[in-house]
Image 1: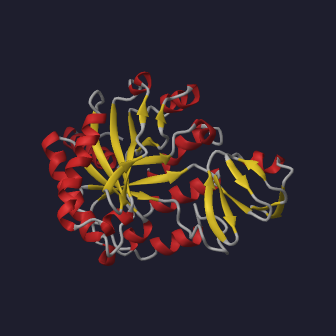
Image 2: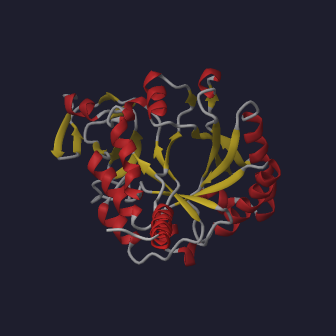
Length: 344
């Protein structure tokens, strides 16, 4: 079949615009990052390898917590210390500050601005030799603490603008689902935390880190969130210690194999163990009769979370909680990297 010159031009233009429009519809894989939530920032060989394999250039680094003291007011706690060699690993950092809801409930409104100034000054001092690109405020605010927390966001945001860095905030599932009650924080970007969904104190709770039914209930018919959202995915495990019906501690430096090999633990259910003899375990003294509930996230859980949330939210970043060799040993590079493909 032969075509005249005019027809060929039409076909060429049609093909060109078809390819152009197709390309415009293509989605870009979100970038993968980590939270670092330990008191010492020092990367070992495994952590360096994982961040290199995932081509990570930015780290969400917890700097300190803020809690409320009845006499001293809002005070910083749990400051991170830095290894200067490890600091050179990343091109940029986001300083994460965890603020207890109690702080936002207790602090007088006229003390919020001074808190913002002190918080930023502390961050900038600690980040003096770091390529700081942002501050993230991590607070599970409530309806009662909303006013103070949003005021804090505004004050910190104003300071960040002068430094040409970005302010972001974490968003819990209940805040995402019910924005008319909890409000929208005055930030340009939020990180939806897809973990710690269940009641850690509940007697019927099987896994407070992740629960499919809870996730689905929060996402169902949720209105579009008005600010850009990224997502934080869990890759951690822990053992919840219950004594006389109450949660008393969380043992975070344990492996499931440690529990299985402990002769003083008796398996009651698939993830529930009773202490048969008082002893030290996981840095904690356990008493006979205590209960340990093992909670974890596996590869299938991660895939389900990513696949489910990808249908609701277009993200630019996926942040794993958190960067730790013991945690990373449970997942391959490929298993983590492949999660980004659900957004394509």
